[in-house]
Structure formats: C-alpha cells, structure tokens
Amino acid sequence: MKRTISVFIASPSDLANERRYFKEAIKQLNVGFGDGANVEFVPLGWEDTLASTGRRNQDVINKEVDECDVFILVMYRRWGQNALDAEPYTSYTEEEFYRALERWKKEESPEIFVFGDYILDKPIWGCYSTFKWRQTMKTIGFDAPYFTDDKKARLYLEKVRWPNGPICPHCGSNEKHYSLKSKEDSKKPVREGVWKCKKCRKQFSVTVGTVFEKSHIPLNKWLFATFLICSSKKGASAHQLHRMIGVTYKTAWFMFHRIRYAMDQKPKGKMTGTVEADETYVGGKGHGKRGRGAEKKTPVFSLVERNGSVRSMPVERVTSVNLKAIIREHVEKTATIMTDDFLSYRGLGREFSLHHVINHGNKEYVRGNVHTNTIEGYFSILKRGIVGVYQHVGKQHLHRYLSEFDFRYNERKVDDAQRSVLALCGIEGKRLMYRDSSAERRIAM
Image (cartoon, rainbow, N blue to C red; front, side, top):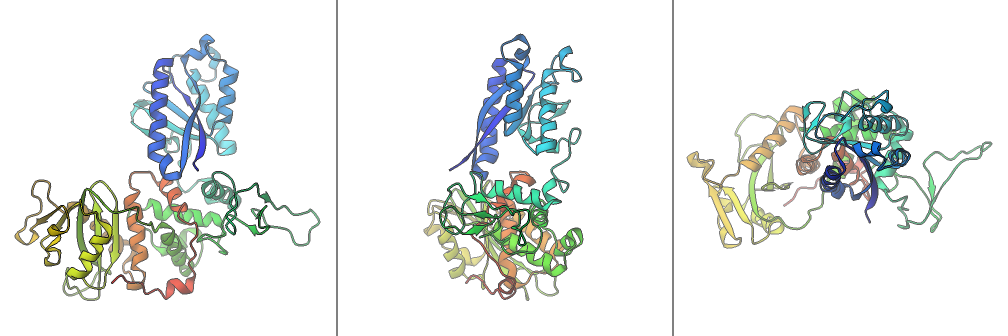
C-alpha cells in the first residue's frame, strides 16, 4: 500500500494556470519519485495572485502550508507582483515559500521542490529539489542533519522503511505498536527507538531484519556511507570512508559490502526491446594479454536494454553454452539482440526475434541503429571505478561490486538523494556477517 503525501503549491500565476501547473507538477513527482519510493502525491491546496482578492482565505492558506508534507514552488516568471501587505517579502508567493522554509528549518518538513521555467532568471525545467537551490538553503549533501545526529538518522530511516507506520519484522503485523520508554528511576533504561509488537509481544527497532542489524556503528554514519556510495558515479573507496567518518579501514570495507548487498536488485521479468550483450574482463591493471583470455582477470557478462536497465554477472568461462544460457534466462524471445562478432554468440538469431552483429574485427562500430555502444559505455564506467577507485577487486567479491554499479546505472535518472532512498529500501530482509563476506566464493557458472 502506497503512502499518501499531501502537496501544497505556490505560484505567481492566475488560478487557471495554477491548476494546469499543479497537475503537471503532481504528475512529474509521481512518475519521477513516487513510483520508486512507493508513495502517492495528492493535492492539498494552492496559493496564487487571486488569494489577495478574497477568492481564498489567507488563514486557510497558512494552515495548509503548515500541514503539508510537500511544498512546491511553481514559477514561470519571477516572484510575482509586489504586495505591500506581504512585507518583509515582495509578494504573496515569496511569503508562502519562506513560511515553508522556516518550518523546514525547525521540523525538517515539508520537503520543498521547485517546478517551472525560470527561477530567479535561472532556466530550469521539471521538478527540482529546492535543496539544490544554494541561494536559499543548504544543499542536501553531507550536511544533512541525519548524517550527524544518530536520533535524527533513526527517525529518518523509520520514515523510509515504515512510511505507513512500524511493521513488526518478527510476525509482519502492522497493528498500532507502541514505543517503549524508560522510567526516570530505571536501572536498565530502554534505548530510544525500541518498539514492542502488539501481536507477538516481541521487541524490535528499525534496524532489525536489515543489513544494519546488531551493528555498533551509529546509524547516522550508515546513512552517510549510503549517500556517499550512491552519489559517487564510479564508487567510493573504503579508505575514503574510514577517513571521513573515523572508523577503521576494515569496518569501512565491511560497511560498503553491506550496502552493496542492499543495492542488489532482483530482476523484474525478462528484458525486452533492443538488448545489447557483451563481456569484459575486470580485476584491476596488470601486465600481459588484454581482453579475451587475459590472465588473472575475471570475465563479466552484461546485458543492457536500450534506455533501460543493465544486468551484470561474473562467469567462470565465456563459452557459447554459458553465455547463451544467461541470455535465455534474462531476455524475452521477442527481443532484438545486438552483439559483436564473438563466435560464442552465433546462432542467437534462431532463438530470438532478431540478432544483429557488429563486426569489431573489421573496425566496424556503428551501422545505422546496430551497435553495442550502450553496453561499452557501461563497461567504461565499471572499469574506471575498478581501476581508478578500487584498484583491485577480488574474484570472490566481484558480484557485490557489480550489484553496486548496476544499481547506480539503473537508477541514473533520479538524483543522489532519491537514489539513496531507493538503496535504503533494499535493506529489508538482508543480513551479511563479516565472516560470510570474507569467505564468499559465489561465481556464476
């Protein structure tokens, strides 16, 4: 069930344009963010130039601004006409915006977005988080309050994991659980954030049943690490994390592996349309033969939908049997397959709708719409991360790094903050112990 979020909109336009922009803004929010975060945005109210004529009561407007979950500023021009009774601001639109902004500074709510053609003469389009508008407030970067305060980090994670209220990880009940509080003279006080299930009577917290469970690392550092790895296009090294948050390198290394496990996405059906297939060899820089047959490197096979997602996996050997088995498992028969001239791909045209081959051996790289440039672009990001950031990747851990790069590529159309939320949505039902991560030997055959 999706969580319902109320939206208020402010604009210097008239009422007719207001409704049109409001509808478009809600649509953009639901498509760009709502579907991924399992929420639905619904309209609450609006403020426009007609508010001053008595068509809408200012007290009602103020109440809606104070109660909304999301505040949207729609501007296709400047703040609007000057209004003397809006002092110290120049217009009603500016007054409502800064009212929401002051509320956010105190309560970290509502979320504020900017939507329009021109904001203070700066061309933009679509729906942009006002946290990126550096002239008015802090950026949602590494100075966000839940990156420095453990309590605020817990409250933030509770909103992400339980948008409709706490759910018991032991029995799955979503009844009205209650938060445990210690008595003033208690010798064994209950720590903050502990809930008790109304049905099974067991205690739990927001980290139970997740990759964060039983971790001694403060939760705000976990959120910081998640944002760091989600916002770094080519990854972030454990050495960088251990310097930034003050933990040992060993701890930082394991933290990133847990987060990579949370990033692991289960395939949603088979790939359709035009699908590019190719393989590469990773493991860091080394001497000797490059490309197919390279020594001390692990083959990685990837499939990518044009304008869609990518799926990558390590393989033991790049034989026709291995590669075709993976393609059959992940691609619909009606899809069009595009590959290079590697012999292992021969015969795919008999199993799929079409199979186009680009002859790299004859220095052919594009023939009309036939190419493998999409997947080559993904490989370039992967290799720049492996070589430039991680230096070397062990064979037993390669699948975790592939999950990381696949996740960032698949969620490339959202901003860093939204990508971090989507990563946190993947922590549910996953545990990874250090002894397990150190002994992994999972290589696809």
